[in-house]
Image 1: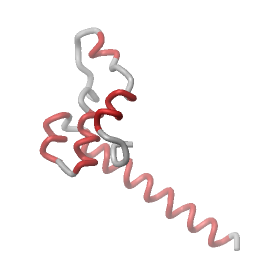
Image 2 (image 1 turned 180 degrees about the vertical axis):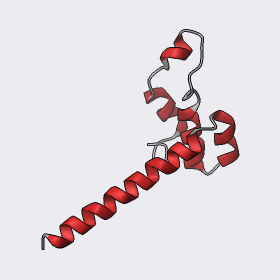
Image 3 (image 1 turned 135 degrees about the horizontal axis):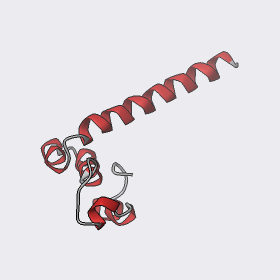
Image 4 (image 1 turned 90 degrees about the horizontal axis):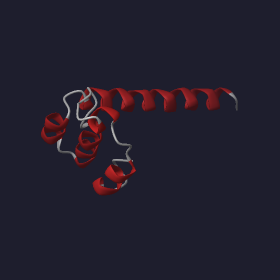
Length: 79
């Protein structure tokens, strides 16, 4: 969604963090903002929003790429 939708739409669709609702912070606070910044290509802003977001985004991207490769291998064998 951060690559397709505008940041304001993503922020509106994201759930409210329970820790932030109680006045605290969790290790993922700012991750939605950081993912939107990564989608826009602004890595320094993403790093400022949440330092964990860039490696997490990379892990999601690698997982997605691996899933696509596995799917292609399976469909190729089934022919």
